[in-house]
Amino acid sequence: MKKSRLVMIGNGMAGVRSLEELLKLAPDLYDITVFGSEPHPNYNRIMLSPLLAGEQTLEQIVLNDWSWYTDNGITLHAGYTVTSIDRQSRTVHAVNAAGEALSAPYDRLIMATGSHAFILPVPGSQLEGVLGYRDIADTQAMIDAATQYRHAVVIGGGLLGLEAANGLIKRGMQVTVVHVNDWLLERQLDEAASQLLRQSLNERGMQFLMGAQTQELLANDAGRVRAVRFKDGSEVPADLVVMAVGIRPNTALAEAAYLQVNRGIVVHDTLQTTTDPRIYAVGECAAHRGIAYGLVAPLFEQGKVLANHLAELGISRYQGSVTSTKLKVTGINLFSAGDFQGTDSTEEIVLSDPVSGVYKKLVIADDKLVGACLYGDTVDGSWYFKLLREGCSIAEIRDRLMFGEIPLGDSAAEDQNKLA
Image 1 (cartoon, rainbow, N blue to C red):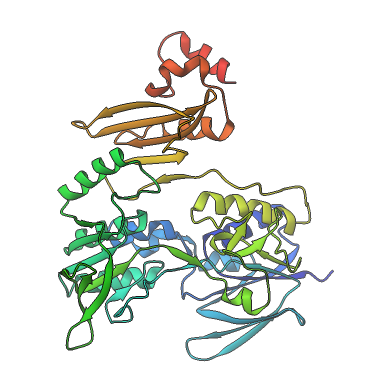
Image 2 (cartoon, rainbow, N blue to C red; image 1 turned 180 degrees about the vertical axis):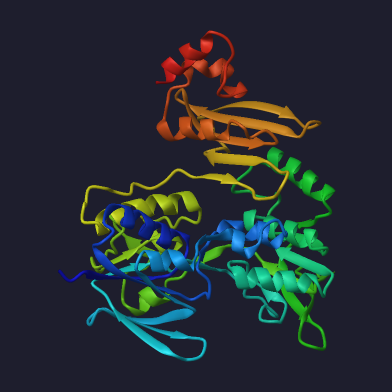
């Protein structure tokens, strides 16, 4: 019996995880072809920060090496960028850097095109030495710059920006982080936790310009960036500028194929696109119920649902995800999840020890944990996240909730029974 043809555009973590799940459920159902614009097998994008910092090698962050594709009968076209999708003939067309063209017909198509770094539209943003931070090429460009230049500016005080800044400091550069808001990681930490984080990063040599708005990037005589100028007229020297101000889903292919796009490629709970049931979208490029997720856990949850439907089981639905956050900077522990800022209708339990660098805030509503923000001591983060996701009542253990998952003495079994 002739197999159906499954083509996937994108060779990143979300897409390949979907294929791994599919191969578990229906290993012989499809002839699978994958197009990846990068000349690498599937790698762990989360580990780009340790790669930049010199804590990991490229070989160590590869998740599925070349042999994995061969062993599973998957045709991988690495270094090929898909240029168009012909939905009428059900064919995708691609080209590589040498101009060589390839086409592949499909019966089912997965859009796993990921996202790209948003580059601030300011004068000088196209200068040499101005980078986003999304892939191995960006990471290698930063590593190379650190061997030749001294001053780096990272625009953006979010997770990716701080990880880039930390890596560049470890490579020997002087780094200034420019952030338009009043405190770092404002989407992941409250102000108190953020201040502890900033203090720790200052001790590592990281400098900050808070509330600063970039006006333009200035060039030297060779056409390379030399400084960042702000709206107040001040300047800071920069031989390298890393833009870490957010990501945008890669939807150009989908739009050109007339698929519905709104904050991403719009999908149903089955991960099928709303426009064409033969085409699925997964990962950072997909918009589910108005949300495009940028963290790995939701993308892997999507992958399991997608695999279920491609395996023709059809019993799984993606309902959205509750997310949590960690920072990949060695020696700095932080965790947040849910509504950690709280509202007028919520209650807070707070433990603060600035001398020891420990801060914990638990947010409670209707005897349920709805948010958590931890800095310094995050050992119980996964337990708090479990309580938050499952909506367990914490009324019976409220007085011990701040002290973590392992109460001492005979009350331990009682507490576990009360939560069960």
